[in-house]
Image 1 (cartoon, rainbow, N blue to C red):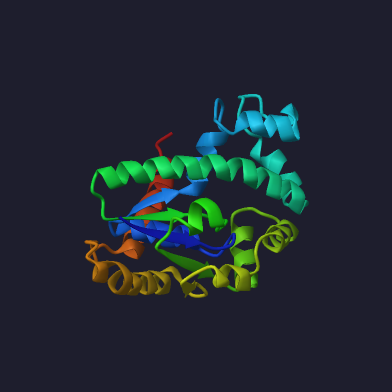
Image 2 (spheres, rainbow, N blue to C red):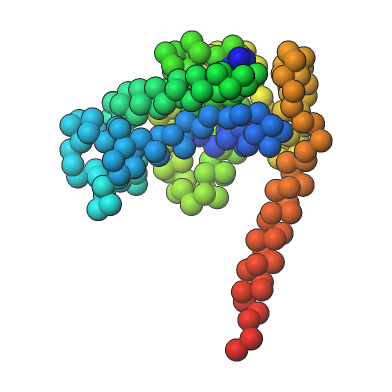
Length: 231
C-alpha cells in the first residue's frame, strides 16, 4: 500500500489539499480529527495531559479544554513540545491501526494529513511527502478569517517549523498562494503524475471547487429561507 504524507504549517492549506484528494477518491487519515478523538472525554491522551499540565486543562465535560491549552502552548514552545509528544504518540498509534485495516482490505493507497511531520510515525511511514506552502501574510489572513486575532496568528506561525524547514522534509512542495481552483489544478496534476502513474485508481471527473460552490450556495439559500419565514 502506497502511503502519501501531507503536511504544512497552520493556514497553508494542507487540509484543503487533503480534502481535494479525498474528494477524488483517496482514503485520508486526518491527524487533527484523531487528535480530537484522543483528547475528548475518555480519550487515551487525557491521563498524560493531566499528569503533565494539571486537571485545570480539562473542561466541565471531561475533555481537553482546547482554548485554554492553546493559550499556553502557542506562547511557550516547550509546552507545545510536551503536548505534541503526548498527543502525537496516541495519534500515530491510531493511524498505524487504521493503516493496517486499510492494508488488510487491499486498499492501494492512503494519505496521512499531519500538521507536524515527525520523523517517527510519519516520515518513516510515508513513501512520499507533499508539503503545502503559502506566504506567511496570506496564512495570517486565512487565520484571521477563522476568527484568530492577527497577533495570535503570527505567534502560532512563529512557533511552528519555518517554510524552509517544512520544505526540506518533503519530496514535493505545493505552493498555495492562489485561489482554490488553482490549488485543485495542481493537486490533480500530482494525482496523475504521482498516484495514477503508480496504478492507484482515482477519479479525475469530480470537481471539488464546483461542489464547494454548490454547497455554499445551498447554505446561503437555507439562511435566506430561514430569514423569510411567514410571521
